[in-house]
Each structure stands twice: as C-alpha cells, then as structure tokens.
Length: 495
Image 1 (cartoon, rainbow, N blue to C red):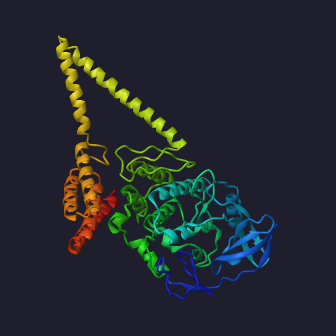
Image 2 (image 1 turned 45 degrees about the horizontal axis):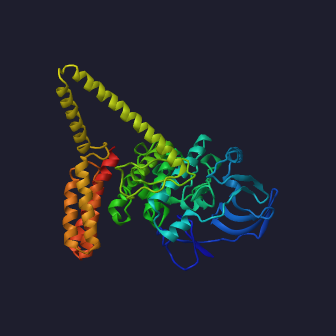
C-alpha cells in the first residue's frame, strides 16, 4: 500500500511519516482499482487511483471508444441525496467554459454507487509544477488567476461554486491560441447533494485552502472561494502553502486564528510585487468582510496590480492592459505588445490624449480670462511664461497618485541611489553599496508608497551585508523588514 497525503493529495512510495510538502501526516491508502468497467455507453480502462477515500474515490480512466483520458469519480450511495445529485449534475453538465473540464455523464452503478464521468485533460497539473519549480513567476501567477477568476465567475452565474480549489484540481493544457492555459477539474459536490453522513463530504476537500467559515461548518460560497484563491496565490508566489501542519484539526486552527505575514517580509529574496502580495493577504482575511466582495472585484484588483507592476498577459488572454509609466520596476523596458495589448494601449492613449486636451482647454480658458485685464502684449507674454514655468514645476514636483505619492525628483533620486547600490554590489564594493542603500532608504521616507521603496532599499542592504559577511547587521536588517511588513499587515486588516 502506498502512502497518501490528504492535504495536498500527493502519493509517496518511500517510507516517510509526514508529507515533505506540507508536513501533513501521511496515511496508508488502498489504491486498488478494477482493470476495466462499462459505465453507460463508455467502456473504461482504469489507469490509476487519484483519490482513495472511504466514501469517495477518484480514478483516471481511458475511454476505449475514443482513447480519451477521463476522470471517474464514485460516491457511496448512503452519503448522496439522489434528487439533489441529479439536479446539480444536470446543471453542471449544461455549462461549457474554456477553463472548465466538462461533465460527460453521471448516474448510478449497480454496486450502490453514484458516479460522475468528466473530461480529464492531458497535461501537467499545478501540484506537479510547484513540486518541480517551486515558486512561480508573478507573470504566470497573474495569467493563471485571471483565468481562474473567469471560470469561477461563470460557475457563479450558474449558481455554483467549485468548492475544492487546490493545485491538484488545476491542469495546464496545450492550446495553440494561448500559453499556459488552465482547466479546472475535480469539483466538489455542493453540501445539498450529501446526506448527514459525518465526514464524507470533507474527506475529498483539501484542508490547506479552507476558509474559516467552512471550518465552522458553513457552506462553500463566493467569499470562501476567494479565501481559497488567496491561499493558492500565496502558495504559487512563494512555493509553499500558506499554512502547514500535521493534522486537519491543526490546520483548521491556523485558518481561524493564525495571521500570516506578507511574503515581502518573510521572503524578500523572491522580489514579489507589493500589490500582488497585498492582494493575496486581503483575500486571506479571516473576516469575510475584509476580503474582496466578488470575483469581479478581485480580478479588477489583480489586473490593476499587474499593470502597475508592468506584468503582461500573453496572447489569447481575455484581459489586456498597458503598463504604467511610473509603475513598479519589475521590467526595465516593456516587452513587445501583443495584438490585444496594442488595441488596449491605443484606446488608453486616445483616452489620455482626450484628457490632456480637456485640461489644455481649461487652461486656455483661464489664460484668456486673465488676458482680458492686460493692456499690452508684453504682459500677455509674461503671463504665458509664468503658466509655462508653473506647468513645468508642477510636473517636476508632481506628487503622484494616492498609492505612490511623492515628488518626481525625489523618486528619480531614489532610483539613482538604488542603481548606485546595485552597481556597487556587483563590483563587491559592499561599503559603498551600504552607503548608497542607506541614502535610498532615507529618500524613501519622503515617498508615500506603502513603504514599498523602503522594503526594496532594505532588501538591497540585506544583500550588501550578506556579501560583506556582517551577520549582526543581516539580522538587524531582517528584523526591520519584518517590522515593516507586520505594520503593513495591520494597516491592511484595519481597512
């Protein structure tokens, strides 16, 4: 018998006691399956057991008629409400979406089982990719979650939730129209489909992504799905689950009571964009009122974070955007725009041009009104010169948006100081690098950007002290980073 982790739903052949990925205690499980079976009009050959539950089991099977790989899920009859099961699966079968594996058939088997037969797309699932690569790039994370939020929105329109969001339920599929296309599989049945059989429903659902409300026994809903998405995003950005422990009870305690630190503080070396970090933290709020109130709200914030961090969606994605000129520093030059992004950029440029024209017209009107009181062309030229000077100074001292407030010359000074520090680190001139990063840290205090530049300056200091071998300063700098992120987390929770 192989060992199975009920948290991440991975299988292990080696004799170990705890899952190396999430620390969950492994169990011996029965992965036996019949060689073949006829289900309705489908002649199935069994290829493997994916979930070896007591009441619920899942298998990868191949349809001998068309050689397609399918997902075959069985449910013990004593845990299923027949009418609710039929109603839910009929509704789900009618739904078609590019990012959702379709249901092919459902019904009952002679052995007292209910079954669901659905497409099981060929490809690497997210659990396999995380195990292979560790953390994923912010670009891939944005692309993935844009797709996931789209399909969750489609399920919402049908009055449904997925209920079992986890890496093992997300597969990367080949598609010539778009790289890294995803499909959701292994949806959990809603609570209405189950009888009062204790524990049967929960055995199929990973405890790594459970919202506090579900821990307390409430049904899955949009708010709990958003929490699960936050936990999944945290894991994708960091390469490690948001919470780990040895048992369901211990994990449930952490979901309900233990606050999580921002990734920029605990893993500054990953260089995660601050807005993406904040997005996952907000979705992970213990109180559902502190989370995004809809998939649409979360998706809007995701795309805003991507734009400000100069992250681009690939060709074929359903949303596109142009980079912000003064937004994040993840890329020094923007990549070549795809067709969808060019169209969006053109529209954005047109809107910006219209806005500038409107402002110019207002300014012209003001100048004309003031010019009426002037008696000579000399005075008129003087006024125009003053307006030009004021306009130039306004740009130079422009404070920026509320999310990145500070004079432009101060931001440019910070960029120069950081660049000098980076060059000094490359040249192994660590004392010079430390001086430059300290200057950048002091300059960051004049910019209201949720301490994002301060975190980057401290991260530079950390690298310089590590290169110098000054362990005492390394610890002090790490402590400063953690203090900033703790304060930032408190501010997020208070909003």
